[in-house]
Amino acid sequence: MEIATECPICESLGNSVPVYPSNVDASSFSTEIFSARRLPDRRHYQWVRCNKCTLLRSDPVLDVDLEKLYVESTFDYSTEVAGLKKTYFNLVKKALAGKKFKKSIFEVGGGNGFFLEAAKDGGFANVAGVEPSTEAIAAARSDIKPHMIASMMKAGVLADNSFEVGTMFHTLDHLTDPVSTLNDCKNALQKGGVFIVAIHNERSWSARLMGERSPIIDVEHTHLYTRKSGEALFKKVGFIDVRSGAYNNHYSLAYILHLIPISRTFRKRVLESSVGTLLGKIKVVVPLGNMWVAGTKP
Ligand SMILES: [Zn+2]
View 1 (cartoon, rainbow, N blue to C red):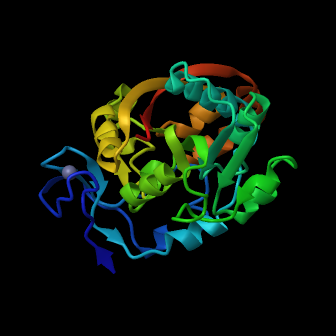
View 2 (view 1 turned 45 degrees about the vertical axis):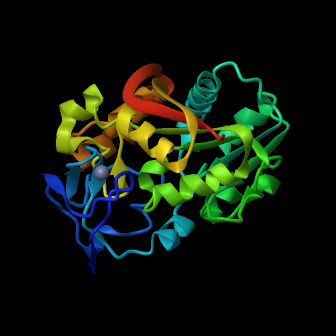
View 3 (view 1 turned 120 degrees about the vertical axis):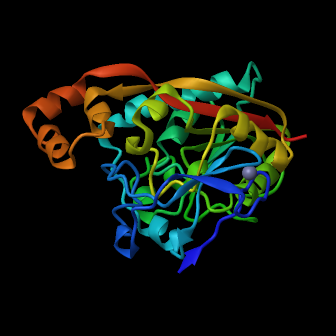
């Protein structure tokens, strides 16, 4: 069944222009598709741009049990984890802009909790992770696993007013109702606490260059943001001191190849060969068109 979606920022229903036509059917939905870091296959719903606030959203979408798919999703970040830990820890430092928080931090949708390892190793005393995939939690480091909660982020999953910092890396653009999830995250923060997300920037040069062939134009993504619309969403939820910025990723060349819009068979053949192993060892810093948005709980 097709469901029309509403713009989460301005609440428009319809009132949009089509950007890319849909190429999905019911067979596009499998656990494999909803697993983190799978090879992008570029299945996507129709993308439309909101006339009122310019947010890009999937509309209409199919009636799919996303929670079930994410609970069953597999975990295979493999060799990129070291780079991602560094990337995310650096962007949190940047987004905190000198605030000396070290007591408590939570993360939503963090897979096996690799960022929480970086946070704990970087001095945070208390960490908590909210993650639906049981397979991902099973792969968590032994000192992180007891702090992981197997759930989607919902009201009551984390105690209210209890964290200095909250984070969500590349999860916001997958949410059906980003306003309600952000609100639940805000409730878990102490007064003056900061919430930070990392998301794609749909107006970045790589997204513009690749257009419909960009890996971000994907059935997993419900909304795609710009710095302006990302900030507008945070303000709508009631965050103050809302800021945003671009960040660079530390990736291996193998991961870059994984993202490039060339034939899936060719990419797979190269990545599974000895050349692929070599590419996995070469680390580079790349501006992939990602950004962060942060806001403070008043
Ligand atoms: Zn809108």
